[in-house]
Amino acid sequence: MGDVRKIPVTSENVWFLQKQISLFDILDFFPEDSIGAPVLADNDSLPYTVSFLEIETDADFSFTTDIPRDKMVFRQSAKGRNGTGKWAIARDLQPGDTICIEKRGDYQYYLYKENGQSAAS
Image (tube, rainbow, N blue to C red; front, side):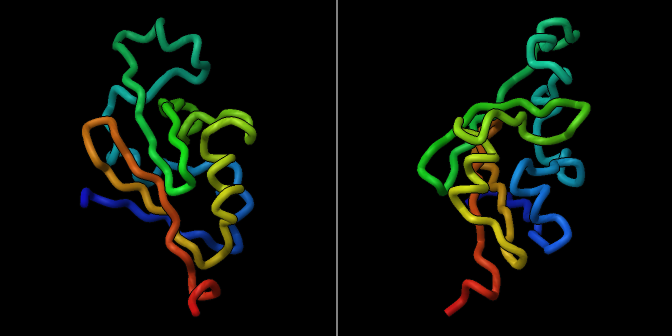
């Protein structure tokens, strides 16, 4: 098992986390060259090559992303496409849950949810 960073889901942030996951407080967990331009098409104009992250999820899909430097989130795609929006819907994030991001390799991560107390039996 690799290093894991955890983001608590609260009643105050659940709406935001259901749309995108802020990585601001854990940005040091990701390689510097995974930080991309605000607009994906502008990555080619940066003075370095942007390396994309492979994110496997506990919702039986994976996605590839960089981290736009203006938002500090996994680059969002439409909720119908593989990404954090689709993952949040599939995992039904609720206050008390915890979003976990496990590092499995230099550019490989595993995104999963730990259930909160309300889901305990």
